Length: 127
Image (cartoon, rainbow, N blue to C red):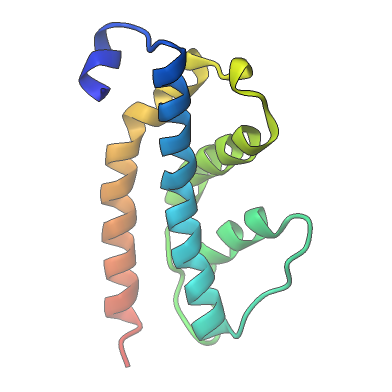
């Protein structure tokens, strides 16, 4: 489907599928981040802003661990978090391909960066 949307806009069904993929894409990273905070930091408070707070925590070192991701990756992931939040709060007919397109095409690069930074984190924090 990614090759197809490089040359033509997705139809409504494809757009909804791509939105679901973006939602799951960021949610997967968030689940990893939650595990790190739970297992190393001892947990965190689930406030109204916990999703943004969690991402912020990942770019900061603590007494127990180094930063999980760089500040530059955090900034890029904030766009995916914002989309995830919007997706959960909107009707599918409000999806906007021009706004989603950049995230879709950035996702492969982001996946490589997250994998690299998580591997660096694990290497730096190995017991």
